[in-house]
Length: 110
Image 1 (cartoon, rainbow, N blue to C red):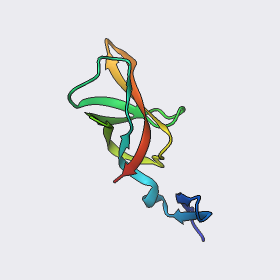
Image 2 (spheres, rainbow, N blue to C red):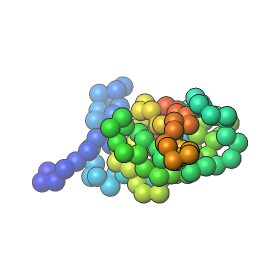
Image 3 (spheres, rainbow, N blue to C red):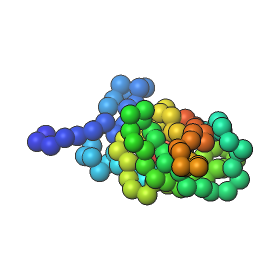
């Protein structure tokens, strides 16, 4: 193909893998299912560093708690936000980074 392509979709029912350019796997938003909170469950949006991979440094984002889960909007697009991965929310507290909570990614969006 002459340039890198990425998996943009997998359809197990039809045994199909769809490929696309990098732009198609860059996402600014995600939604999770119910979150597990290690702090008092937030009732308003808050700023956090969100990691979607164990070895990533995390990305600044705004986190909105919702009745069925969490909505996250990143300051900058993230590569390959993938349903089934864990999104972990970190807050800065007293000069240290602390895990606030996490949720399994249900969907990614632009």
